[in-house]
Length: 151
Image 1 (spheres, one colour):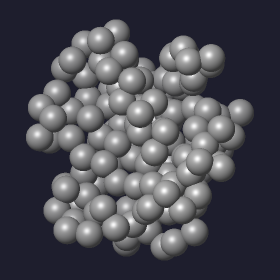
Image 2 (cartoon, helix red, strand yellow):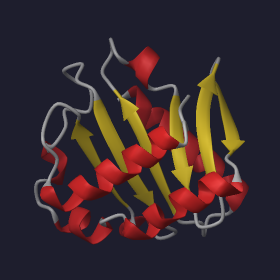
Image 3 (tube, rainbow, N blue to C red):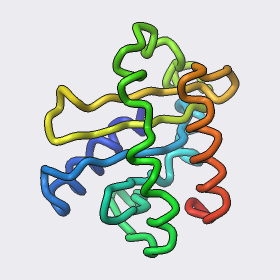
C-alpha cells in the first residue's frame, strides 16, 4: 500500500519531467507493513524512449535513466503488456491483497495520457497469476534479473 503512494508520486513526477503524453509501464515488487521497507525500494518505469529506476531516499524521489542497451531490452514490454486483457478481467482486483496480509506482490501499472485508458494489476507472488499475464510476467522478470535492474 505504501508502494502505491510512492508510485503515484513517481508517476506524477516523471509525467511532469517527460510530458503528460508519455505512456509508461511501471513494474515493482512490494509487500505489507513488515515487508515494505525492504521491498519498496525501487520501481521500474518503461517508456518508448527511455527506462528509469525510481528510488526513494529520505522521502525524496530519485530517478536514474537506464542505458540505451537496457532500454532496448525493456521497450518491447511496453507494447506487449496485455492491457486489454487486464482491463477486461472482472476479477482483476482479486489477485492480490496488496500487502494487507504482509504478502509480497508484484505490480504492473500501465499509464496512458487518457486516465480511462490506464490500467493496473497487482499479483501476490505466492499465487498463480492469471494465464493471460503469466508469460509476460515470467519474461519481464527474467529481463529484470538479467540486466540487474534492481541490484
